[in-house]
Amino acid sequence: MSGKHWPPGTQCVTKHDHTKPKPRELAFRKGDMVTIIEAVEGKGWYRARHNETGQEGLLAASTLRERGAIRVDPKLSLMPWFHGKISGVEAVQELQPPEDGLFLVRESVRHPGDYVLCVSFAKEVIHYRVVHEENTLSIDSQQYFSNLIDMIEHYMKEQGAICTKLVKPKPKSGMKSAEEELAKAGWLLNLKHLTLGDRIGQGEFGDVLQGEYMGQRVAVKNIKCDVTAQAFLSETAAMTKVRHKNLVCLLGVILHNGLYIVMEFMSKGNLVNFLRTRGRALVPTQQLLLFALDVAQGMDYLESKKLVHRDLAARNILISEENVAKVSDFGLARVNPKGADATLLPVKWTAPEALKHNKFSSKSDVWSYGILLWETFSFGRAPYPKLALKEVTELLEQGYRMDPPEGCPPPVYALMKSCWELEPGKRPSFKKLTEKLQKELKHLRDI
Ligand code: ADP
Ligand code: MG
Image 1 (cartoon, rainbow, N blue to C red):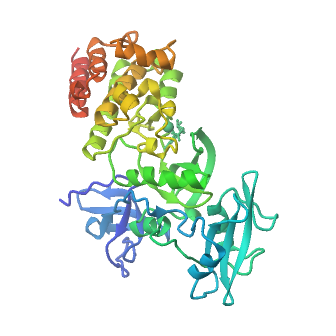
Image 2 (cartoon, helix red, strand yellow; image 1 turned 120 degrees about the vertical axis):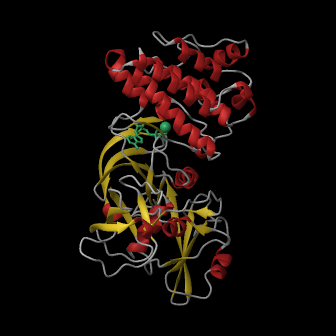
Image 3 (tube, helix red, strand yellow; image 1 turned 90 degrees about the vertical axis):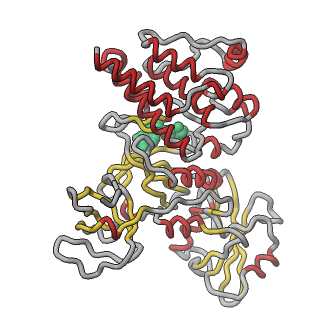
C-alpha cells in the first residue's frame, strides 16, 4: 500500500525520466507535470494525462510526487523587475554588465505617478517613460496596458515601439521571482491549455469565469490589478499547503492579465444562493446537517494546519455537483489591503475579540461558524435581520444572541449558542463540532 490517494484532477510531478514506456504507459521526463485521471484498481498505478503533450497513459504511483507548498514570503514578487524609486543613474548601474534585452522598471522621479522602463541595448541603457493616465499605462500612446505586469508580458513577446524585445528581468536585490518559484514547485499552469467561458461570479477583486484546463472543468479568478495580484499570492500560497475534500482545490496559477487563479469548478455555486433558490421545500434538514458537517471537517483540517480563515461565511462555501460543501477564500482577510481597517470587516460574522482587538484565531473562526450555521438553517437569510452593524456589537456585549431560525432542531441551536460564547476558550473546537453534528445526523437517520 503506497498510502497515496490522489483523486481525479490532482496535479503531480514526476520523480525521474521514463522515456521508453511499455505499451499503454506514459512517457515523461523528470519534473514533468501530469494530471491524475483515475487510480487503477488495487495496483498502485494511475492513469494520467501529461500536461505538456496531452498524452494519456499509465504510470506507477511510486514515480509521482505531489507538489510542494509555496511559502508565504514577502520577498516573493510578481514584479521582481520593479525597483521602485531609484534614479536613472542607479538604474544604469543595476543593468551592468550590458546585455541586450536586460531590463527593469522604476518610478519616475521627475514625473510622479509615471514609471520608466530601462532597457539595456547595444551597450547603452535606454529609458522609456511610461505615462500613467486614467488608470492606463502607455509608452507610445498606441499600446495601452492596465498594469505593469501586462505591459512587461507584452514587450517580452513583441518589440513594438522599443529598441528590443525584453529578454531578461533584472530583479531588485533580495526579491525572488514568484513566477520562477511557482514553476519550480509545479504550481504554474500553461496558458495555452486554458479555455475561458462565461462569467459565473463577481468577486470583490475580480471576475470569476468558468473554463476548462486539460479537459477538466475549472473556475478561474482573474485579478487584474497588479498590487492586488501581489497580495493574492499569499492566499494562493495558503492554498498550496492544503488538500482536503472540504476545501476548494487550487489547480495552479497563470501570470497573465495580472493573475489567474485556477480552481476546481463548483457547479452549484455558493451556499447562500444554493439555499435561497431552493428553499425549505427542496432541501431537507439532513442535507443542511451534511453541509454543516462538511464545513466543520474542512475547518478542522485548516485548524490542524494552523491556518485561520477570518472570513468564514455561507457566501464563501461552495457546493459541488455531488452536493459536497467546500470552504473557499481562505487567507483572504490578509489580502485585503485595508485589512487593519475595522470598518471593512464582515461585522456580523466576526467574533467580538477579533473586531475589538484584532484577535483572530481558530476560535474566532468558530464564532463565524456559528453564524454560518444560522445562515444555513434559515436557508440563506442575512444574519441579525433588521439590526444595524453598530447595534449588533453593542447588543452582543449585553448578552443578546440571535433566535433560532424557524424549524431549526434544538440541538443545532445549542451548537450555535456554544459558538457564540464571549470567552473564546469556552467555544467548542471544530473537532467537537464535527462529532456533535455526526451524532445529530445519526439521530435523524434512526428516527
Ligand atoms: P471574492 O473575491 O469576492 O471573495 P469569491 O471567491 O467569493 O470572490 O467568488 C465570487 C463568486 O464566484 C462566488 O460567490 C461563487 O458564486 C463564484 N465562484 C467562486 N469560485 C468558484 C468556483 N471554484 N466554482 C464555482 N463558482 C465559483
Ligand atoms: Mg468570497
